[in-house]
Length: 128
Image (cartoon, rainbow, N blue to C red; front, side, top):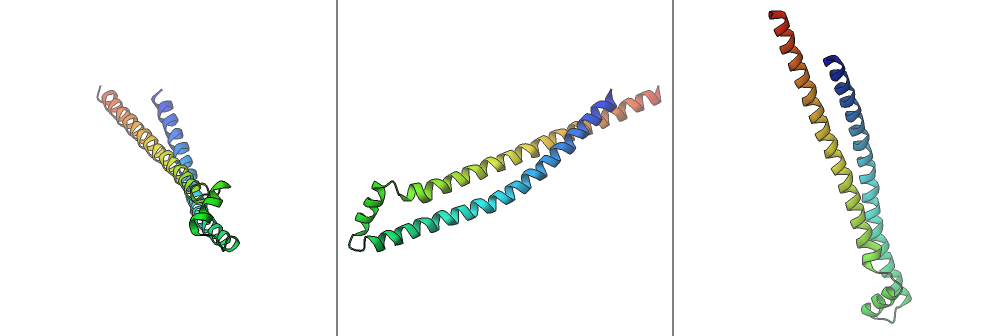
């Protein structure tokens, strides 16, 4: 029975560590994608302002921004909100990684405890 518990815990540990490695790889790839997305959002907003200034060259900055806003083209929609969404998604991934770390620690502790119990039991049986 103890052997089965040990094997089950070891298998769970291996699977959890594998999942953590997969998550770490995904986090790294997504971090790069999110960083590029944030840069693109900044560039898109700057390009939008430049193009609007060219098209509305006789308008003031406030008039340009007002016209853009009427079309729902705002800094919040183009730049701020997407960047916040990237940050939230990244935070969720990092939280998931921490959960895997905790599960790995918990599983490792359970395995160590099982080994200690087995050693104690073997010593008691051997000494009896």
